[in-house]
Image 1: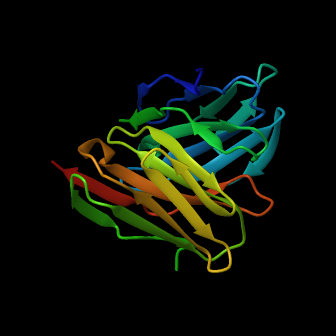
Image 2 (image 1 turned 60 degrees about the horizontal axis):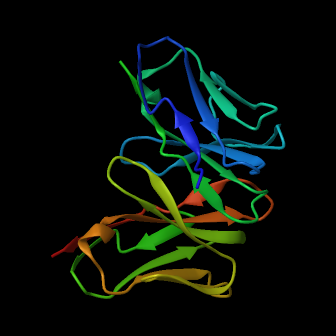
Amino acid sequence: AAGVIQSPRHLIKEKRETATLKCYPIPRHDTVYWYQQGPGQDPQFLISFYEKMQSDKGSIPDRFSAQQFSDYHSELNMSSLELGDSALYFCASGVDRVYGYTFGSGTRLTVV
Amino acid sequence: KNEVEQSPQNLTAQEGEFITINCSYSVGISALHWLQQHPGGGIVSLFMLSSGKKKHGRLIATINIQEKHSSLHITASHPRDSAVYICAVGRDNTDKLIFGTGTRLQVFP
């Protein structure tokens, strides 16, 4: 069965660079969620989209932006990267919170 | 005080033992999730509950809405069950999940 696909799996960037993380939800899932998990920390909610519109916003820095496209995939754009942005970034997809979430395997971002 | 608390934080068991992980929350929720995270990071959704009890293989999850408490049980535990188990709640009328701090389970042969 198709799962939530995230790319890339690993990414190394230097400080002040820009990174783009991609998430491809399960077909027919209309909601995408982004979470950030720092080393040894709980996942923290960043932002979510429902039917291509932003539906909720968490602790997402102003340097980050995200969108959901017409094919329902989502991209998280991160600019002026800082060392503290090094984390595992999860995407999850669902059907309007009804049937639970399916998580992607995550993108591990390392900022050096 | 965290909105979602789990106990214990760490748990070791011998293969075959019955395991219980507890989760308490202090906010109104639309649903509670039990997740499993293996070393390396991938998160797997085990259960989503809004009432009662669910069972999947050797895993059982229960929730008591009045007491704001949920338990995850693993019967006949196996070393491959070793992982971090996370309780997360979806709050009323929001998309985001609030995560507990996780329970690190190690099952030894």
